[in-house]
Image (cartoon, one colour):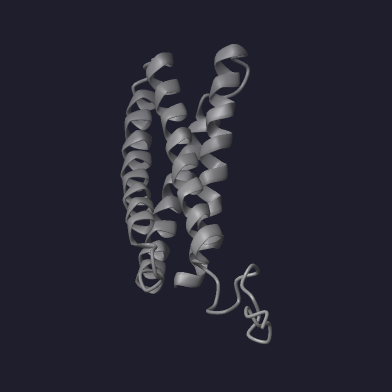
Length: 154
């Protein structure tokens, strides 16, 4: 399941970011249905759960990479936090939508807050990939020197 984490994680990032942009556009130009950003956020929240489950599997593989522990733990904590925040944010927005309560500031804060959270979580995951080679098969990191290349000039 670990191999699916990089694939699954891009869906909640994209969906939550697009939902936030649409919600802000809706505030400026109310022609957009209020439920569309909400629906995208809910789908993003659902995918964040699957991405986190795959991330838990990836964690057990990545934990063996030297020097990665602190950054890996930060990313895992951010990922777990984002799952719970996106699910709870979706629930709060659902209540507002069902009760037909329009609280623009709260709604925008939820959308923008979740967008910032997924961006920070995504950047921390990218750092694991770039700096430590997490997600690459051992020896397959594109920046790794092939075994045939000698580091010794003598």
